[in-house]
Amino acid sequence: MIRMSVPHVVLIHCHDVGTWLSCYDAPGAPTPQLQRLADEGVVFDRAFATSPLCTPARSALFTGMSPHRNGLIGLSHHGWRYAPGVRTLPERVRDLGCRTTLIGLQHEDPDPCVLGFDDVRGLGFLPRAMQVARESVSWFAENGRSATPYLVTIGMWEAHRPWPPEDYAAFPPEQVDVPPYLPDNDDTRADVAGLYGSIRQLDEAVGTVLDAIEEHGDPDNTLVIFTTDHGAAFPRAKGTLYDPGVRVAMIARPPRAWNVAPRRERSLVSHLDVVPTLLDLFGGQVPPQLEGQTLRPALTGSNGPADRSLYLQKTFHDGYDPIRAVRTERFKYIRNFAAGPKLVLSKDLEDSLTRRGMGDDHLAPRPAEELYDLDNDPWEATNLADDPRWLTVRDRLARQLDEDMVRLADPLLDGPVEPPSPPVRT
Image 1: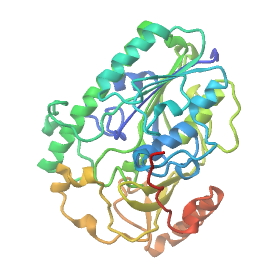
Image 2: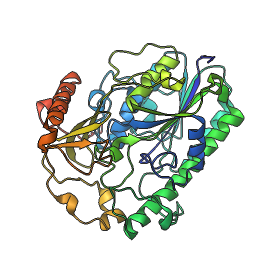
Image 3: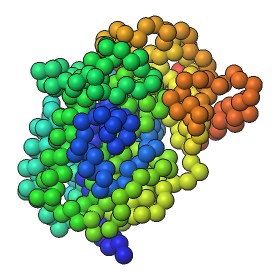
C-alpha cells in the first residue's frame, strides 16, 4: 500500500549531458552516484526535451508549455523572455502551499528573482557543481525536515563546454564511449575524455546532494528527480532534433514510503510532463493549456503514457535555424524550414576537438524532409524521406506535424520568426 502524502520534491538539473551516463548509453561514464539513484528509482529510457538548446529546453521543463508558446524560443542572454502571463513551476506550486527554492543555475532569465521562487541561493548561478552541492547541504541542514512541502530546484553548470583540464581532470581516452554518430579517432576520444571529467564532478555533486537528503532531509517523503536540459555538446547531438540532441536522462526516485520497486520505464515521456506531475502530486489541478501528462502512474508502479507522439522544435541558437519534428514510438519525421548545411554547428562545437577530426560531410545541403525508422536505425543514419517504400509513413507524419503546428499555434506558420528587439537601458 502506497502512502500518498504530499511529498517534498528535489529537482536536480544540469547542462549538456543527454544520456551519457552509465545507466543509459555510456557504460564507461564515471557516474556511480547517478547509478545509485537509478538503482533506487524509475529510469525513463525514452525521455525527451522539447528543444536541443539550453533556454528553450528549460522553459518547457519549468512551464509545461513548448518554447514557442511560453516565449523562450531562443537563449535568454540573447534577449528572449517569457511571454506575458506565462506562469512557472515555482509560481504554480507556491499557490498550493509549497515553499520553493532555487539553488545554483537557471537559464530562463538574467534575473533569477523574477522566476517565482521564495528563496534564491547563489543568485541563479554558481560556477561549479560542488559549490552548488555545498550550498544545497547548507539548505537541507536548515530546512530539510520542514513540515511544509517544498520544491527545491538545484541547477548545475556541468557538463557544458569548455572542459579545461585545470578544472576537470580528464578521463582516460581509451576508456570512453564513442557513439556511432561520431568518428572514433584520437580527437573525439580526447574530447569525450574532457566531457567525462566534467561529468565526474557533476556525479560527485549529485552524490553530495543525495547524502544531504539522507542526513538532513526526509527521504521517506521526498521525490528526487534528476534530468538534463538536452543532448551533449557534440556534432549531431546538441542543436539538432536527432535523438542524441533531444533525448535526455530522467531518473525519479519516489519517496521511500511509497514502496515503489526500482524499474525502467519504456514509454515516451517529455520534460513537458514534469509540471503536470508535480501539480498532481501537490494536490492541484492541471490547467488545460499545459501540454504534458502526469507521470504519477509511472512513479507509483504502473505504466507510463501509451500511444504517444512528441513535438520537437529548434528556432534560434547562435543564429536562426528553424526545424520542427514529430517523434513517435517508431519513427522520427523532421522538417527543415530553411536552407543550410546538414549540421549547423554552434561556436563551441565548431571549435571542438571532435570537429577537427570529423571532416566536412556535414556541410552538404540539408534535405527539406527527413524520416527515420528508429526500430531499425536508432542513430538516424539513413534518411527514408524519398524512399518510395516509406512515402505513406512520411506523408502521415507530415500531416501530423502540420496539425500539431496549427494546434499549438506555431509562429512558423506565418513565415520566418523575427529575433527579439535588442535590450535597451531605461
